Length: 105
View (cartoon, rainbow, N blue to C red):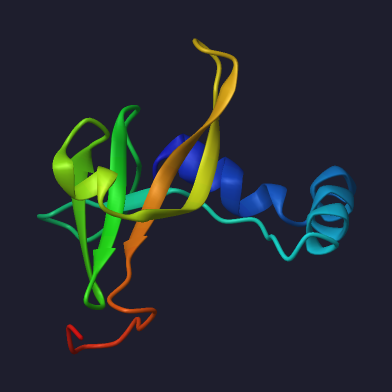
């Protein structure tokens, strides 16, 4: 398993992360591990900087943050970007008339 992915998997059990999770839950938020899968092995891989996972009609695809698919979607996952010192969307979801299912309304 990739080193950063393994570190993330282990971190959820630490008191510091447990405390962050408790605080986030007050806002309806949680903790997740931004990731992709290696196309050949299926193994976890970190989500590269500047990439966004886009859920559209219950299908996930990956796009550069500047692509139109990203701008048409609602952010649902964020990561901290050290270079800009701000939270950046890393997962977005496209809604259709408030629906999130297989059909486009």
